[in-house]
Image (cartoon, rainbow, N blue to C red):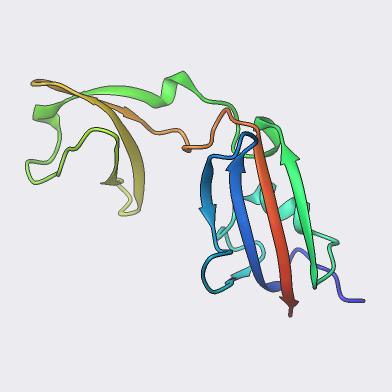
Length: 142
């Protein structure tokens, strides 16, 4: 029987939600996802629970914050002067804002609060600090 390895290519459905049912991400209501294990498409901790699983079955895992997206880090919440942000940056409370890193890469911050002079961004993963329910149905393994 073929099982998921650390270098497998997978076709699967998955759902990430809080244990009380707030859905963060799901592919069950659309076409299945495809991903290369170890490529960073899925968080490493979530990939780790897939290793050894067979295809054609559905699994549900409950993962504590340290097993999922980590603890919420207060140092990743930062108040930034609006004058220090790009003039063309669209600022809307309770939205995700993309930033360009000095190395050319990008990262996202959640804009929690906005006033006349400052913006409060949270650079933690949105599911950081939460116990999650990770449901997966592996359709195929290559």
